[in-house]
Length: 272
Image (cartoon, rainbow, N blue to C red; front, side, top):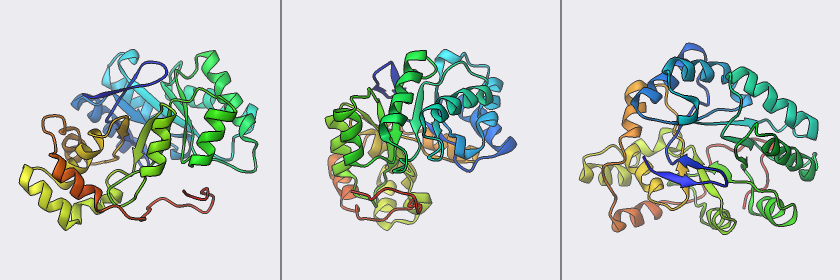
């Protein structure tokens, strides 16, 4: 396993995303992932599956301190007291005393950022979250959080895959000493049908998904959180630590970058 350093502790560079996983399917996916070797599970209030994530963790039998658990507060609950209550409720659903990382899922311009991030800092002080961070924050929002408000965040989670150029945002994340968490790393499965990625995968005897995940892991300070409900795919996505991509192949993947987003809700910020 590869790890990235956070403000407090380390985060496994490969995790299991749980968006759209529900009920027993979610429980089984989490349990299977932990059995394979994953130690990083990502969930959120909005996913509606924190109870199931907690059950999967419990069924794994693994000690809590060997795991890295992330959850997030939804953008309609960003007032100071709402943020505090959100994590308190999440911990109850997860059956845990703390999370390793608590994120603001999406920014909300109707709520002062100062109120939201002050509450996040309070949760850090209480020990309910070992690290705090943000998700879907732009360069301007990162600068306000880190430079003006001076909130000690550890990460920004945002869409990152071969078809979306995020170099400027990634550079800003690194400038502030943060970790970049890549969601939708497989572009909603579109990487599987890419001729360029398929050709690279064939040369390594790997799948296009494994090639993309390895490409992300070879970027400093980047974490990837692919989601899958298929046990075989969960295992395949984890089998990316025994090979490395050559620089020429990384450059070919970089050349695919464009402006294709697969997550762009109506309440999204104005992207960089």
